[in-house]
Image (cartoon, rainbow, N blue to C red; front, side, top):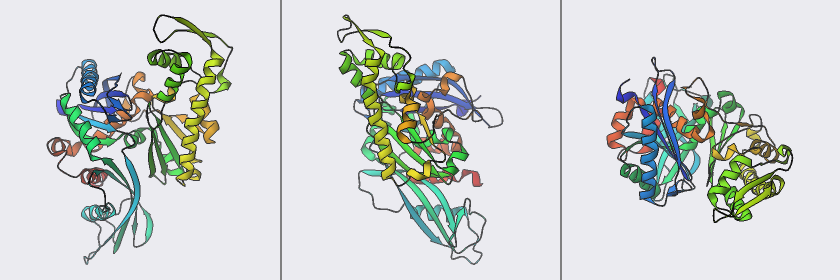
Length: 413
């Protein structure tokens, strides 16, 4: 295994820094996960850096821990980005084929996608991704790959993801201060969706929910592609804070209680045991019954999934996702009863998101929803490996949408 084969996915989450290191197996099929680490980070809030030094230290520690397990070193990382500074929209583009042969080329595809992304943006924003949703050729929709076909009018529908230039630059600067280069910044929801949402769910219609600590990422898939994405400024840390206030204990103790004893749905309440914990001073012993603790948790869980349901309704995609249901991932999905609560409030089938086993050779510990985005970043790196070397040197000079479009059509050649 050469050093060039080793890739690292670094997920800057909402309050956590997660890194996985992997390498492709012989034959270029699956990716073998060699090591990983996930650490809390108070320098990040909702996916946005609020303290560069503290975040850089957390990144250094996470990557070095992953390197120690993998017994390799890395210099560049694929950076997972999330947070409310990300915004997305759908758009259309058209391109007339004026040549006499009328045969669609890859350059024509690039041109029509470029036309689709030609929308006015404020000077403080930049395009991260332009994801083709489907092509039309001479008004005939449903053309997956138009290259090689003949026609006079090529049209495309795209999903465009934009980011705050300042927040994105701060992330890249922080990674650089930690001692690493950003090969490519990637919207974490799109990366995770590549390994969590099955082809059948993409076709039928499906809602992907990445339940983070301080933010929730929503993605609607239908007809084989992403149709809608949104970042919500809520997350599982809200539950932790409610527990800390209600129990008069520290945030760290509240997080431990939530993960070890928390219940998000009354159907899972079996008995009414007492839970021992210490007060906010770390010394005063206290106790609470499970039912009383659940009384603190349930209102917040109901509020969170009600906000998701309202957002889905306002997006006009509520009916689209019902056949495939929802895929729930992220650290917030790990509390007992969260799936049951989501099913009841959203009114659809909900499953826990796990990466497809055909894509990775991986220990079970890395399949935890905590690492879903990092796994998606490793998979993304495989898709654009052919331009990774050039990206390291010009990552912030070449427009990101152009590099992303090139990666989408890699499999055409």
